[in-house]
Length: 421
Ligand SMILES: [Mg+2]
Image (cartoon, rainbow, N blue to C red; front, side, top):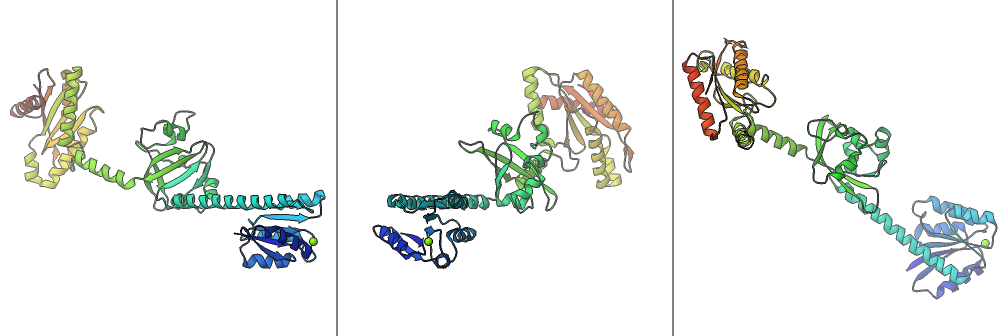
């Protein structure tokens, strides 16, 4: 049932309308007003679906009445059809500028009924659309993720999490400061930022193009100045050039897995690789050796008379000696070399793509470097090194055993030297 408000100062006109709608009693319910003020009064206390409005009326005319109705938030969307004998261009133009439909008297009844029906249908459709928009926004706002919609040019719509994260009240505020979120992506390690894009590439296109890859970005959280890590997902909206971009906060996952990874692979005292990681690398290089017959050297370092350090100066100085030793070697090896703490005061070095002659040069230089390093409190310290290379028929154990034998020989024959086996 729809409520139609008929407004006319001529009661005969109201009667005609009443008779017209009488046939459709089951569909339309008629309200009547004999002037603008009366119409507004009815509108205040009733739900009205459509207004048929006379233009010439003594109190306030139809134009004024329509203007007031259009200004009120509650009533502005109610469709209005002017019914008037005035046919001049000015009247017609005025009606359409107000967003009001127009039908001149005497009107054709079928036409009037059709227009009424169309307006009511259209309004219902708009209402549905508005509701859909509200629902969509509510769904977006319920997301803890940062979500925004953009086209090729700019951001079109954002959710509440977006506003919260960037500390703004509206999208316009964001737009006044930035072109796009992407310019805020921080450059760091493996995180995606605009600087990794090739000339002329657009970031949305780049990410969409590589569906199989994970793209993570860092954004500064300005509430505490801590960078946060986000996983980016981009979905193209069907049949449009618009994209939904979702940023999922993965900060805690990233930090946790990083901490876990560091713990599992690094020696807690010296910060270099631990024995686990060494074993992993050894396996990898062993396979590489078997496949490509690459020259690979392997060395074990042992700090000479280390036990004395602990006994004389205590464990804290002992630890500091280990740290200094590891740091000195670690900073002076080549980027491809793998240096690890083997256990106690023993360290291992894998040198890929290195002949035994070169390997000797490398480790002997490191030995000299240690000899010339000043260790806190204890002064100078030396080390012995056992060196070998991967050989045909080797297994990992035989490589390690050979280096160990060489180290033993270095110790037995005076220390502070490199022995090759
Ligand atoms: Mg009149």
